[in-house]
Length: 108
Length: 120
Image (cartoon, rainbow over all chains, first blue to last red; front, side, top):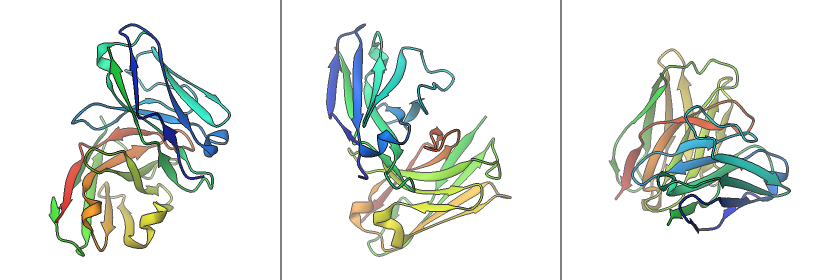
């Protein structure tokens, strides 16, 4: 399969924990990268290659993987975490990169 | 400090060829494992990977666009150029230049500001 599937929208109460999921056959073979995009801005890498966070990304962001599902967890969501989140990995051939359709996170 | 900046036309007519240049600094595309690529995002829609070029000149293209794309690099100038032929209104999007490294899934650690290209 050359697709990654995400829920279009998720909401979380301020300070609570939220999990954003990404489904795809290729995820049984390849790591997932996660990007955060706020309105009018370029995306920012928040997690890559099995729970690595770039410098400056808070440790409330983490990821996990089970079979063909990857999950981005935000523990203690903050108002500034409200954004679109995209997962990315390789397709099943390994030759190309693919993105999920994105999840809009609302922090209530 | 790593920076990437996209340049090119912001308006093209249908059937024309689009040429986008990514000018970058703060890293070398000769470094093993490095890749520079293009991601696009149609207005209000999701990110789409378009193309990548690696340090060893390996080139990859989005399968649905492969026949229309060419990516090249000039390591001495720190530039990557993407050419897309036969532009169509559905190609209207913000095109981002990105730097990837650090894993086989090539996480994009750095993004340009993006350039909105309108096909009309």
